[in-house]
Image (cartoon, rainbow, N blue to C red; front, side, top):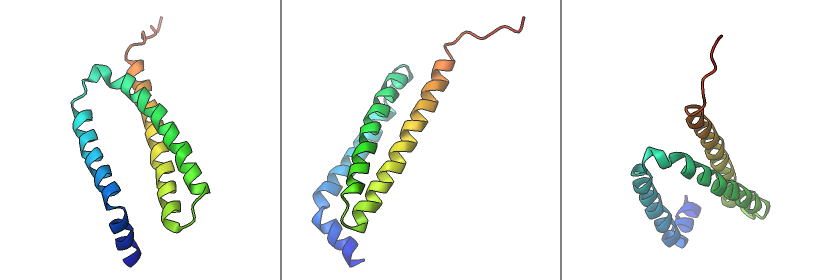
Length: 103
């Protein structure tokens, strides 16, 4: 517990910025019209591809357990976001395809 508290106190400014950006991101994304959803999802997939590569690099250079756990979580969450983004984009693009007739 003392290690966690020391980590929090050492990086409190960075944690504060991350929390503020999280709330700002939620506010911005909630006001995006549905027409722009697919292009923005494609951009988010590209960004999270970079996040996954960065997290793998962090895990490769990890010297302590916290770095390894955070890198692993970043890889898992980034991968989930990329896969989910492709699934949602595929579903949205399916709406614009012509349906095949059974004749």
